[in-house]
Length: 239
Image 1: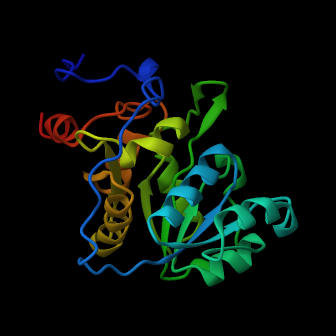
Image 2 (image 1 turned 120 degrees about the vertical axis):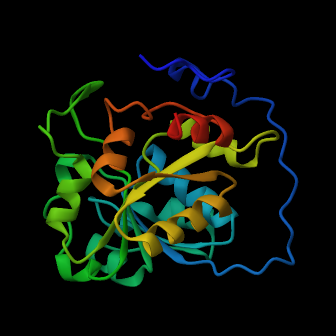
């Protein structure tokens, strides 16, 4: 068993320190950034949180769910002109980067493969076989399967390990940045996702290739549901 890093939070503490957090110092507005249009497929609790913090960071979002864009009117109105809604395939076509935040079992066949051709596809899904029970995928990582189903996409495993309540507030909290992990086989794609993570106030930490790095992040892996600071995450990766 791996020795815990000093000061490391236990998974049961995720979201428990969300009250009373003070904003981290504002980022330098003189630093120019290219904000991308991000498609978010899945608008449950965590997809909705991601949309809110992306818009707050100056990004555009296009949202989609299984029930149709008409059900997303209140959320789009809340987010303002930086947000829009569409059916999943259309949202994927409009987005420069796409994040899957749907149940893992619905990923296969969700999109026509051509709409994600040559796009960065963030697999933020989690494969479970039941409540809290990781799915048995043999020696395959869940992101390996996503890459198999969408062979033209540049798949990056990311944004799946943090509880939605922590994701909502930790990026603007005082103190050390918490880590979000990236795993993938395309270095440029990981750089793009790392830039988004940085924009949101988190620290990107590379866990390696899609297969080995993705397995570290998925349910049952040692980094799942485990909030680590940047220093703690880097210490873990280098151990």
